[in-house]
Structures are given as structure tokens and as C-alpha cells.
Image (spheres, rainbow, N blue to C red):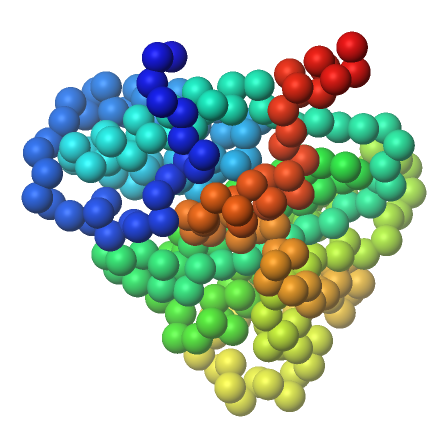
Length: 256
């Protein structure tokens, strides 16, 4: 609590985490800290990516990983009053955002997929997950991420339909890659996507069934970007606000 707070949960340079030059640290203490942060991710999607990244080093944590974990604590120290704020006067429409970081992992050049879904004013579901295969193009990376988002969207779509008692409109999933959007609706690109595994064409099937709809969104408005890579302060704070994470303490003081 006496540490200096940080403006972002992670530094943009990920190469330091892959270095084996630093000393090993107590794995039990490191795992306890990461486990606590995993619990906090349930209400703080802004630290989802960094916790997902640091959890990959729980077998042999080193001093660089321990310092990165303490960096998250220093960020939480300065944003202890922040949280998701839901309002009743917003349009209750399920909208998703999906993005990925191409070859973001320095160790194996695998990609990180990020996705979040908002219902009304704030997100209700999110994840940051490392892909299991190495993609050959940015379009393939985005297409795999869109497939993961489509599966999540169909599950939420059926859940909300059961709660409200009627079928909902197709879930809009925003993507910042034009090729990915075209691949989901246009079979003409089949010759250039033969290497893509068939299980990833699930998103095309859901688009044809009108369960989901992929739409293009500019990169500056792609809120899922915060779930795929560490960002600089300006972009991070902007996307954090778009997620619906606000300082509830400050809001309460202003309302009083």
C-alpha cells in the first residue's frame, strides 16, 4: 500500500519476460500472487491480459516475472476504486469485440486472442487467450480469434434468449481486419484459406445461420486490443473507459 502507483498494469516490452538471466524466485509465493490476481480478473478486465501472460511462467518464475507481478499490484494501488459500472438507461444489445496480436509471443511466435462482449453500458464477458497454433498471416490470426468469439457469442445468445423468452437479433462482432470479415461471408477466398483448419470455419457457419454478424471497426475503436497486448498509457486509459471501468469512488463523491 505504500508503493508508488503505476498508470498501466504492464510495460510495453515483453522481451524481458523471456530472459533466463534473472534469478529464480519462490514458486509458491508467485503462484499465490497470480492466483489472487486471477480472482480479481472477474471484475477487472483491464488486467486480464497481463494476468494471462504472467500465469504462463508459474513453473519456473524468475525475478523478472516477480517484478512484473508487483507492477500489477502497483497499478491496482492507484486504481483501487475502479470497477465496472452498469447503468439502466442504456440500450440492452449484445455486442462483441474481437482482436488478436499477430506473433506477439517472443518465445514461440504464437498469437494472443482477446474478446469481450457488452450488454448495455458495460462488458459482461471477456477473455484473453493464447492460441494453440502459429498463424501464417494476420488475416488467419483474426479469423481464429473471430471463431473463438463466435462460440462465446452463440452461448451468450442462447442464454439471453432463454432469459427473455424470445429470439434475439444476430450478435454483432466487431473486427478490425477487413479480410477476416470477407472470409466469414465470401467463399471465394477458399483457395487462399485451404491451410486454415476446418474447425475455424465455424464462424462462417454461424454467419450463414444469422446467429452472428461480423462488422468492421477501426483499430482506434477496437476495445479488445487491450486484451491482446500491453499498451501505452493514452490508449490503455481510453480502452479502459470503453470497457466501462470507471472510478466509482470519484463518481460517488461527485454525486454527493
